[in-house]
Length: 150
Image (cartoon, rainbow, N blue to C red; front, side, top):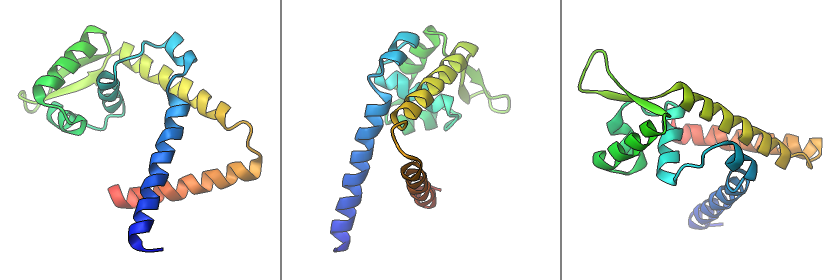
């Protein structure tokens, strides 16, 4: 198989994985009954803040692919819902850090709990050998992605 065909196959597999991820995480009735469903931009921002992937507004906006003005509106909306607050950097007052409130932290924990239950339920039908194979395969993919993305 040529290198171009290998890249193409890899892309197809990643897209297929994304489809399975959506089936596991999205359209979960249990989730929507217990947790407020956020619009996609708000959910992405909330998730990035929850995972502490970006600790300042500029980096967060770049990661989301939106302007500072758009990010301001997103953060304003998350603040109105009580999920985040803006904290000024103690060393540099010009820097602002979006931080989860207690309500936001509770939502984050509840969402993770529901998702873990959903994932566990989706894998219940696998026998132990298949489950071991899946774990090893995902560990291998994760190791390779960590090499690529640091």
